[in-house]
Image 1: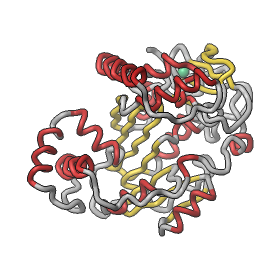
Image 2: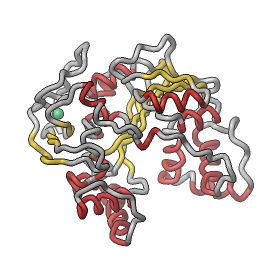
Image 3: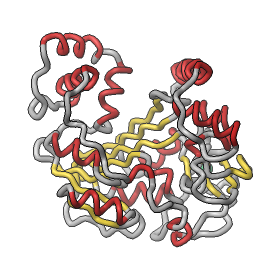
Length: 347
Ligand SMILES: [Zn+2]
């Protein structure tokens, strides 16, 4: 891939026809036409383009903010009140916690594991895949004693709750007033705003996280610049988002349920996201993950068959076999997983 990044303007890119790549400016080819809402919330059909130079995928035309607000139904699925999960913890959780103690510095807030769980953790924690699964739950944020964390797109606050329990001083940002209300009832400090309109914080953060948020914006480079500006020197930003350059997107195209038109507007390819962050002065790590994607495959198969809302059903044999194949392809290529993990540290 060879491309040069567009300069980042003071304002996000304007709404309207969007033939040019929002990241590098090269005219994109039509990638998918007639893409429908995989959740069945919103009637309509949308078009996505793909950049031949930097592999970014985006919706054309680029919707205006007031239009984007109409794409979200009253109850968006990430924003309902979270379940209380403090009941008896399964062994997998205890082993993950032991890995977080040993590998991510959480020895202080987490209790010591039993001898058996500690042994399993020390064996599995040396394997990259298990380390990744444990790290995913904390968005790969290592412990900073007394550290401040901002969760962008915090929804009703489930991640804030987990990180507060691990000793973080947490704050959130979310545009959904209903979700913000739920998070505030749990005692969290949350600003209700889109990223674009959010005020810059008075004090910078040791960690800023975005999980399945980055695909909801129209000007990805502008957003990364703004958010990385909220990170303290020595701090970290983690963005996790669906990979439109991955195997599942290639297999299923407009039936890939993580495409989710019209709410998912932009998918920046892994290497392109790394290039943006490097240009912003970050020390950057990017990779992809094929994490329990059989349900995504099953829903994509359901959507392809029914052409309507992709109902949830347990993953069948075909989906489980396809998941194995997708994992193998990701292991061979390194950038074909279904989620991008972008980690940027500020020197
Ligand atoms: Zn491009």
